[in-house]
Image (tube, rainbow, N blue to C red; front, side, top):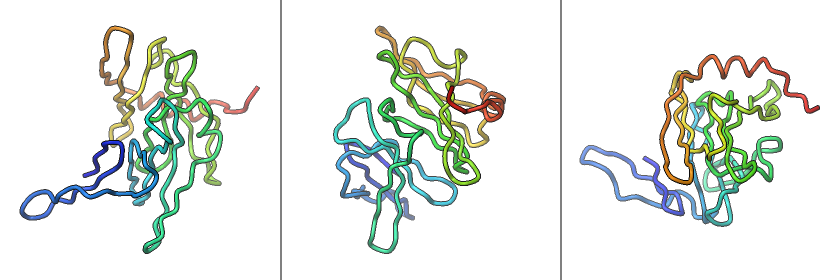
Amino acid sequence: MFMENGSSFISVRNDTGWENPKKFLVKPNFVHYLEVTNSGTFYFTTAPKISSRGDISRIFMNDSNITLQSLPSPVNSSLNGIDFYIAKDESCIIFPEIIAGAGDLFISYKTMDSTWTIPKDLGALINTSDWEYGIYLSPDNKYLFFSRSSHTATNTYWVKIGNLIDSLKQVSFKEN
């Protein structure tokens, strides 16, 4: 199990219960939204401090060497929020972009050459003038779970999204 409290911690379950949590990474100081894919690749957001902006990165581990690599543009930009979700098969990534003081959810798809498409807005079904964040996809990629905060309340939503993810894959991602 991975936990977060400004840093990332890991606890392993054994026959007698859970081990005491141990720090997962010494650096960077701030690790947020640790995700593990089917291939065993770790992704997370790094940021110099807790804020609304961060870089989505992946970890390369070789014996005792740990290398952090920020994902390239267009996934990482000056508009990124700190939350994200990467599909377990690494086919797509969903993250907020901060626009006009709120976070709207966008999706980018991994291409055959392992680059990422230009992010596409998830649209009015998901995005509002409030802040959308806290993204999670069901293991079958059919349901999106996310939080939305307004000035007065925060709510969690569960939306059937399977067709939306597939349909956006067909949309042209070329910049105008």
